[in-house]
Length: 184
Image (tube, rainbow, N blue to C red):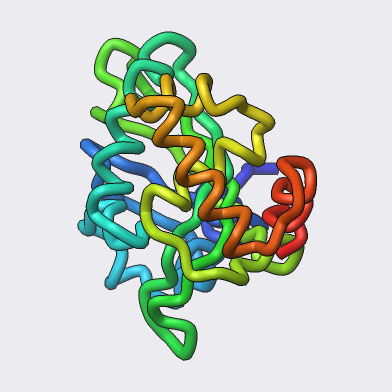
C-alpha cells in the first residue's frame, strides 16, 4: 500500500507549516482552522501575521536562531493571534515546535507544528508584548535572572514585568501566578 504523504500532511490533527526564511510556503487545514484563515491567506506570508506584535516576531526569531543552529529543534508555548474569522485578532496560547532543515542556516527552511492550547489555557488578561514573553518563561519555571538573560534585559526589569503580571492575574505568589497563567 502506497502512503499518500500529502493527505497525511493535510489531515494531520495539529497545525503544520513548511517555511523558508520565516515565510510559510505550505500549511495544512488544521493550521488554517486554528488561525481562522484560508490556505491562500497564509501561504506566501511571513509568520509575523500570526504574532500579536512585530516586536515579538523579531525578538523570538532572534532567540530561536541559535537554538535551531545548535540542536536543529526549537519548542515553546507562546501567545499567538488569530488572523481571520469571527475570532480575528484574538490571542491564544499555542505550543510551537520547529525543526530546521539545515542547522547552519536555521531560518532557511523549517518544519513547524502548532497546537492550540486555548481550551486548557485561556488568555484572560490584556498583556503587553513583553508581558507575554515574560509570562511564557515564568510558566517554564525560569527565575528572573534566567528570564533576563533569555530576553537580554536586566533581572530587575523582569521583576517589574512579573509584578505587573501578578497584579493583572491577582496572584498572591510566584506559584499562584504560574497556576493562574496555566489555568487562565
